[in-house]
Image (cartoon, rainbow, N blue to C red; front, side, top):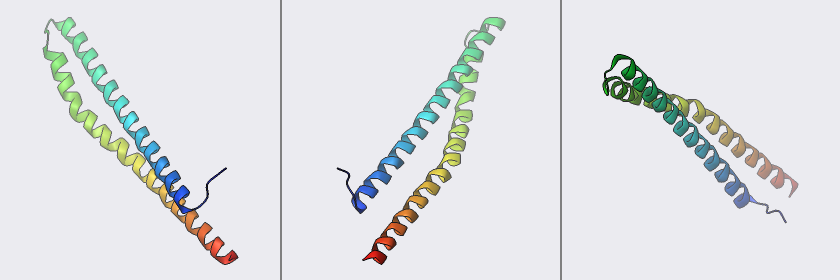
Length: 105
């Protein structure tokens, strides 16, 4: 039996928001991992080519930190308006349903 009412809609919208935020966290985590792994791999390869054992690996991993932070902010800022827009649409739909119920009463 399906639940109805404002509490069910609120729980559903909160659940959708939590899932969206979990998706963002996962995306940012994977992006971070890929960037640091590429920097480390490239640094180790350059170190082996030029026989400068920790120099390039350390430099590229350290240089990847600000790049990663910048890309994290860009990803979050690009996705946040979409989440906000979806939340606003859900609130509008909820308001329309409530006014329809009031008219029918």
